[in-house]
Length: 142
Image (cartoon, rainbow, N blue to C red; front, side, top):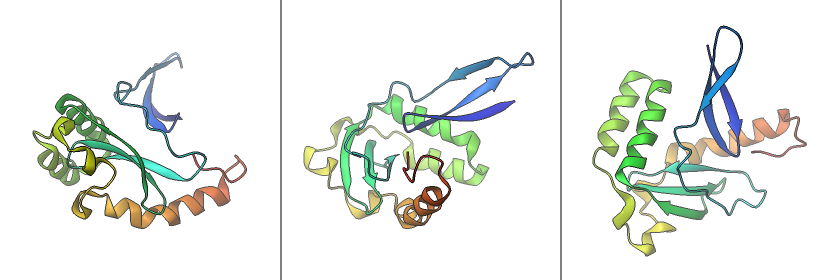
């Protein structure tokens, strides 16, 4: 049985053995730790240029880190089992050979519009308000 666990803004999956013990693995454990949220609602995303960016709900980028091609591939591999097969194939193609190490400094916090996760930015305000309304954590989104 697999159970989703949320910790420090990263979701990872735990395998439950038959005796009920949890064996966890976080494939994104070696990803850089993004900062800048400062209590504000936001999310982190690996963009198609290989940069891991922290977005606030309004689309402002507050932190970014270049990823190696291995880290990008780890991201794609970690997401694939949780996407419809067609979407996973599209992501594998989109991120194939991507290495964020050569992304210019100026592009880290100001990427081209086509690199931004538009779908997530459009739905995030609705999602975060839903979570905030139902959250046992006094309206805080993690």
